[in-house]
Image (cartoon, rainbow, N blue to C red):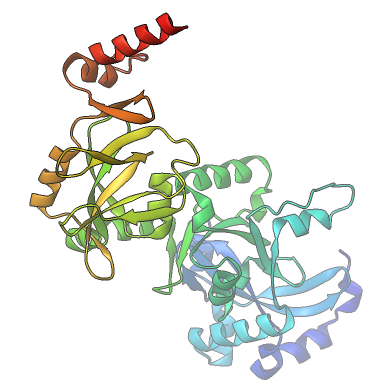
Length: 386
């Protein structure tokens, strides 16, 4: 980049003669605090976790790029301004001249020559400035976190791809942040030039609390929640699966979680006088899910069969709640023994599985035979009729 002909001593002196001339030429650059510890002691900077925003003065700008010089402590003293004022002015100048740009990485890759990509969107976004040059500084823009969380529809993780851009991924798409850490380290090691590396860390933005922090700090903060608060956010219920004894579990009180447990759209049935409900898959029979437990009248007559996994939950007038200890014990006993179902003419017979049969199921044995004299006799008669 040969721009020396565009610069001369008089022009530089004119630019540098007053802070008013410099003010609108300020730009922000992000660096690693750890890797630049000694240098940072000589320049004004603003810490952003384990990164630092430093400042430069643009002397020329053309199609080839920018020519700039660093803003050091001597200039800070010469102009008689504070670090806070410098930071605010630099952010205002940078965001005005080089606006924020957030693109899905699929868009970016499609824009590259000779790289064919399908229509499926990759849930990863690139944030940089309009020049796509030294664009990691956009994370200091006043509206960056808000715009990013709006684009990603909530909380997100940030990966420092290089000093030129950062990558963003929604928390709901990210999985374990340790996998993201491994990815950042590998990319830095194999792809990014040493002088363009930022950090090996991953960061998180909490859109509700408006907190930007390292991912490890976020996880630690979440794990530090009061146990009582966590308890109140969970439902203590009973999960009943075919061929299994009931299991006491804690789950989120959300439609998504309940649907996931029963494997589809839910329905709530209330066959008992107690304030409890059974959350089942409303299409369990249509989808031919495994028969689970029978529902019987007081006289023992079967009135229905539940197909697929179901939950036993407490009920109030307008919401689900945890089962009380008494209800937990009562319905664990009610559904304690798994049942197998045998077709008898036009009806079904439910047989409780106990003893050796239950042990066989617990051990994962298949094809366990249920010894039932009536069933054997019925099968024998059917063969004789044929």
